[in-house]
Amino acid sequence: MAISGEPQVFLFLSELLGKKIIEQTGKELGRVFDITAEFLEPYPLATGLTLGSAQKEKPLFLSWENVVEVEKNIIVAPGSADKLMELNLGANELLLRDDLLDKQIVDTDGAKIRRVNDLQFLEIMTGLHLVHVDVGFRGLIRRIGITKAMDFIFQGLFDYQLPDQFISWKLVQPLLSPDRLQLSITQNRLSQIHPADLADILEDLDIKQRKAVFQSLDVETAAETLEETDPKIQVSLINDLDSEEASDIIEEMSLSEAADLLGDLPKAKAEGILNEMEQDIADDVKELLAHPEREAGGMMTTSYVSFRPQMTVGEVMEILRTEAADVDIVYYVYITDEQEHLLGVVTLRDLILADSGTTLEEIMDERIISLKLDDKDDTIADHFAKYGLPAIPVVDDDDKMQGTVMFRNLLDVVAPHLGK
Image (tube, rainbow, N blue to C red; front, side, top):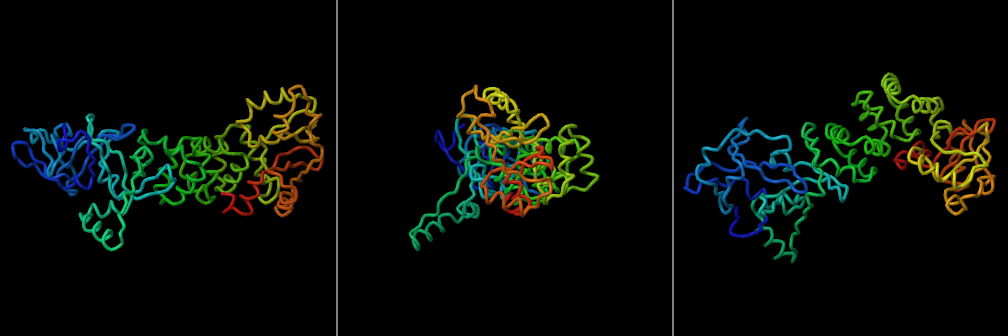
């Protein structure tokens, strides 16, 4: 198939909609109401067009393979009228006008929500491919057919050329209805956005879109994003999941964040989730829930690493390589005795610089800055401000290690708008 004799031509959806569909014999079949496309990587491929109006429950469909050329009209092969059928979308097919035009998409490069004003196609030998989303004002004026007039006004009065604002389809994540959001071809794009940016996007969506997008994420991305999200929205998102699904996500969160979230949930919902969680994780979370939120015991995480003073740096580094992914804090290694009394601390930097045969006892800092379980948030804040530490260990009245408070945990409690 060729388009106007050119090997490659760019077309816009707004230019295709409304065109007459005419057989080469001259028989007119109708006008283009929509374009269907299959969501292939890297660019969706046009599969056909629909005729008629939005009022029809079952619009007529003509496969794109019948299209001969696109000029002023859509020229189709002789006998195409006999190939018209009722529209029946495949699993990975969408109606571009109905499902994308004027809808919201996520620009995964800029981590922003955008409005689709037009779509740009590229015709090559393999077919008509959707390559760009137009999110600019120029896309709007193109749709109402006044591009030339507006260009004349902007150029003549302001010496300014209105620019196109295109986003490559490869950087786009559609925000579709829940039943259409599960297009597996596009879901990996959301996981490429930083969790903090993804949390901002979720907070900007309406309730239905937020739920659909969140539930389309893989477990790890969902957990990371949830940690960055406003507590009220956290509760709303988890409440929409059954206990088993919720437990899978919460298990991937840091213990302190998991405890904060479960503490905000209705009691019955929290208990149901805890019953589905792995026993050791559930026990750790319950321990944190036993302490008030604004005290060190409520802010701390019990997910840290501690070792005996006689262990060598080489032994510790080997263990860290296998366990670091499962703990909340790795930039400090805590040194404890057999009864878990806190003896000292070693930074990750110290470990990297030390010889592998050096014992922890030789390099640990015994000038320990610590908190008690019942220390309040003002005391905790004073410690962070005075000593400039990224994390402070928490001990009980017998100086036994109980957990550690990260600066982030403090912010989440005393300044949630900053912590999140």
